[in-house]
Image (cartoon, rainbow over all chains, first blue to last red; front, top):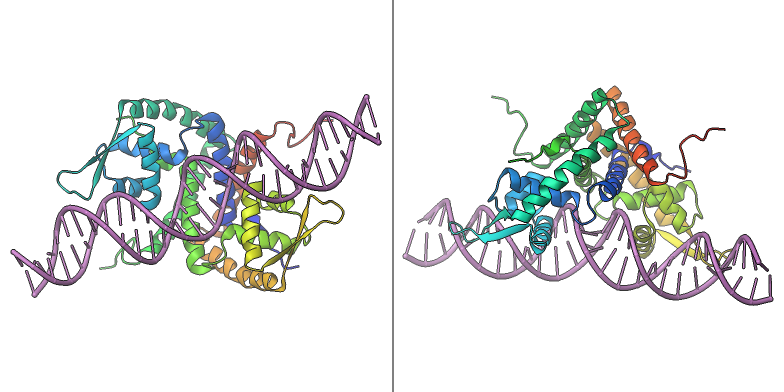
Length: 154
Length: 154
DNA sequence: GAAAATTAATCAGTGTGCTGATTAATTGGA
DNA sequence: TCCAATTAATCAGCACACTGATTAATTTTC
């Protein structure tokens, strides 16, 4: 009888939070385009012509996952993939007109969904929510690459 | 040029948080047993003899996912699966001695990992972190089944 | 300028997570 | 009692997510 209370385990809470979000996304935003796919579209709106690896970096997806996400978006004709003439290893990515249109539409719906999702928190609590999660994520991310300290001492 | 700032999108933050957790789990807890697998072991320590569906309910995994997780734990001989003689549809689940041993070992390591993961937050902030995430998750969960209000009026 | 190191993308393999359809067993009602 | 509804589990199909190995192109180094 040495069971643990999972409600004090951040990993468990993170998974539950993502599930809750997935649910709401599906009902309020889109059943075709997923949240990571929207993140990729958004990155390419901000910086058209990025290569695949860099897009992955921007949205926090590894090389394999980003490849699949991009191939799906390509299949739906939401983006174009062109070999970089300067560097034959790279593919340069750019949204199609349809991709831009979808991004615009989902931006509106996503904003509405976020409001509903965060409605149980006051404005001050919402800020705190972002801040706390971001600090924990950043710190864990920092443990990954010990070669790049957050602040180097002289 | 209508790109959005993803750092104010709870879904994006939830995904990043889970990634960060996954990373730390792998290095500090186990490369074989995943966090959801540990959650299942933990549920069966708390309530031995549960059926598959109920375990899924306890840890927040749907019928398909819980089936695969359990089949993996069974393959590793961490739990036993026996037909319920009372109800031939159910399988009753119970940890093996090895399953108990693994749960004990991982409980210690998980506690250590959680400390490291939450280290960037003060004790008060950690409480807040749990509270905010839980409230958002619970509220979204509540939107799912409108037939079960949180508090019924008499 | 050719060999070595690096880098972008892909592939194979594993695991989580969801939905819709199906199968098998149990329960409830006419 | 028998037929209908419900329920537990499985299966097929899709999508995300990571690692390690491979391939192809570029850059570095000697």
